[in-house]
Length: 334
Image (cartoon, rainbow, N blue to C red; front, side, top):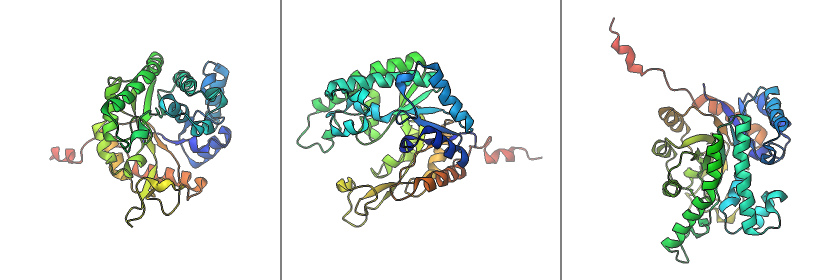
């Protein structure tokens, strides 16, 4: 398989990058999708050439490369309303500051600009992340929500993200938004609306992660085809549904991960309901040749088991497209 298989380090940021790189190299990964938290990457140091080279040298030491970096946590804060304890718990002091909501949003926006600059210094063309959303809180549409209020949310997204994307354009890097509940684009139609809001500019594309489609009953394979010009990155994460008993709900019931009363749960790649083979075949059809990145999330499985097993699963199913159609051999009748 010519496409590299990488490991997203977001769920491993409690470990030093040196340790994560050692594990990934021993398992046989081709590279890491580096998260911009923990000690893995710091966008504030984008202009420190020694720091940047040090990260590349560390990866090379373990036979790894980097094709994409991610900054979900800071991207989330760019548009979110309200800004509250959830953000305090995941943001560094440099972004949180005094906790004033607008100040947090502005500092998060600057961090995303620096993330683009860091990516360029690393020789990376794609940054994955979240956008946040000022209108996700209205998803139930009650109390009644006017169309003007929804439109204002998309405008807020465009106003806050266009200046960020200007920097992405300046440095030749693309942003791949992960379509995900709690973001401005969380399903099929909101993805259309988000792209419309920013005028379909090329700097803004999508990170295809099917785990967020399955529990919403969206077709992850059709999504690849319909947004084929915007699939800038692929994350492999799985979801298992358990909604057939008339008790477990789609919204999770405020229950913790791996609780058997939930209607769905994230599980390690290959252990859920994502149609992986159909998905990889469709990625072949649209000509996607970027990295396939394993995002390990499974509250019921040890990550040291799940990450290695997921690599073998992806390598088995994410086969290359053929050089020629099978029936081309019939043209030579001898």
